[in-house]
Figure 1 (spheres, protein in one colour):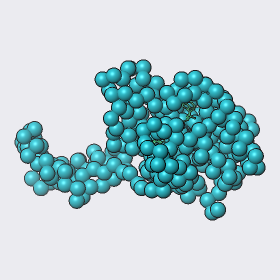
Figure 2: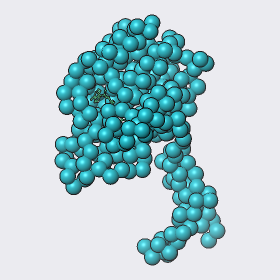
Figure 3: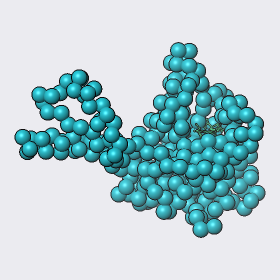
Length: 304
Ligand code: NAD
């Protein structure tokens, strides 16, 4: 095994079941000490239990690894702070954070209550913010950190009945974009994982023969490439059933309209040029978009 995590301390949220459990087992098998966080509620976020997290800790310990369970609700910052304080007291550092905890409250937008929207945002978005905030200064001081956000094809591309979940899953990509920029000089790498796997989250939306192909371990093989020493930063890795792909946001080069030309009709009239992908690019930051437009304006003024 050339990708090892010896001496590293990892926190995996929602690690009592499904993907989080699989990530935690593999991190421990490769030498990491792992905090097994799980609130232990149902798929829709109702209830709490320590049974699942305790079971994963027992599995890791039985294999000779080190782990402890913590039942923090990731949506509550004080509980997350307590979890990180316990990890620091026990092991003195936090190298890896996999923000994986999640719930579903699917309904068409017409039927979705504001409470169902807010709870999903709280767990996925504020859960990722809370956990990341609680380890950020530690990682800065260490000069080392690897953070994984768990996004979803539903956030990247949309899915019927998942307005809350899709909004939350795209929000964590936005969080990654800025934190990857801010973390770069401290050797903090921030990436996103878009998984597809058979877990209790997906058990009733796909036929059994397909679920059998979507083992969580296939996603974990990708997840661990996002949090080791040589991991990239600001990468969106899609993983499922043995398939691995990169997802990106590109922007076309676009057009420039002079002050006299600017009208909705002129913009609509150049739609094909606006959509021309031949010179599209991934932008390093939001400022690069302003820079591109200002350069076009400058070129016009100089040419005029
Ligand atoms: P899962 O339901 O098996 O596991 C999620 C875990 O998160 C559970 O153990 C649950 O107790 C825990 N959890 C929920 N709310 C929590 C909270 N507030 N605090 C702490 N723990 C909490 O689901 P999974 O499929 O393993 O999902 C893991 C992640 O992957 C989620 O973020 C999910 O949205 C994402 N995801 C999964 C798929 C898929 O195909 N399974 C696809 C896209 C994204």
